[in-house]
Length: 325
Image (cartoon, rainbow, N blue to C red; front, side):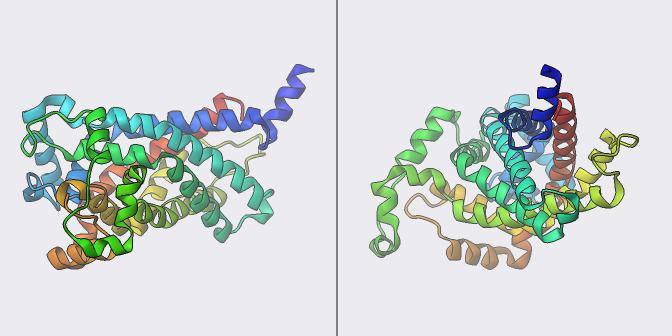
């Protein structure tokens, strides 16, 4: 009897049993995937945000390794993982919500295989990404601030508490005209400071999560057996390969938004006297580097995102199998 109930719960995607276990599998998958690529993630942030100590290395894979070597030389292994504790605090709920939301939205939009279309796959992915980023974005800002600081540029060790205080007490002063277009709300409601670059993130999440889940769903439907085929099942190797391709496609589609977002997130450090806005950030990138500025660090992005997405999707799928969903 209990076995029958368990089977019914596992098959019902709207049940609490399925939702919790799907979220747990997603959270663990996100943490493992991020840990694998944490050093590259930090180097990429330093390049994207134009940290002056590391711009001489930007643009190539060899430069990324040289930057990593310099971080290791000055800060040790701990330096390569600076900000990673905040990453794990953020990524578990982020990945859990994203995969859990995807399962639910996918079930709502595509309750049966014959209902699956590329537009619906894209929509399900975009919606799940937007939902997850809304709830976890402040932790992303903490992570970027911690990763941006280097011993060469700042002799103090920035802790999570200090990052919180720094962001909370940042003031945009000295430019009265900015008061017209919303700056006063940031000073009046400090909580909004933890959402620096949120608009760029939200817009960038549409192509990133949308293309990622679209590619994932399309390739699985095209090359793997149906989920209810008892004789043939997906393998971890297949999940890794399809996840890797999904990550590469998603990174290519959304990378310019990621560069804009990084610049806005560290705006309180690079331009403490004012708030960086969308248009200003785009113009600054274009003026300094042209169209190539929107793709700085893309090769490192591939080096990071491809294995990260591959591991994330593969662990998520295997986690669901182990948990019976």
